[in-house]
Image 1 (cartoon, rainbow, N blue to C red):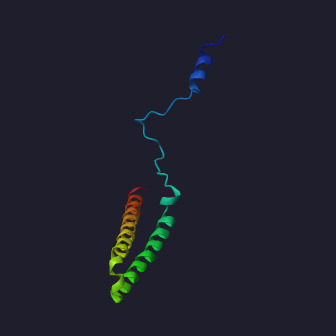
Image 2 (cartoon, rainbow, N blue to C red):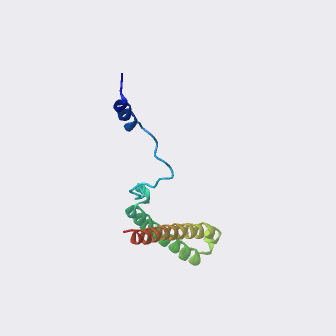
Image 3 (cartoon, helix red, strand yellow):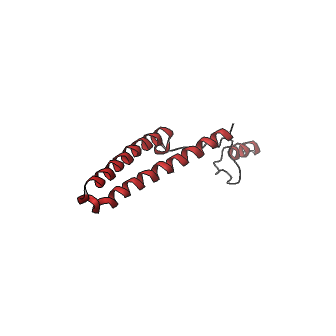
Length: 103
């Protein structure tokens, strides 16, 4: 027979899910590897090269009239690379501001 102390021991070590209303003590966000600061900076650097490539493409199109029908491709490359750069810059800026707010 298990006494009252034995029942308390069983209740103490039961596995229960954490109460969803309760805040955990440590609330540090886990950032995936592809969203880390280093990988974001590498992506911005690579998109800078793509943007420069698109700028050179526009200068080539300006020199040669035969390539004007391909201007939309170059503009799309410029637009998308700039969108990625701005998106990552906003993300890194917000993360930097949030880290300054938390002690």
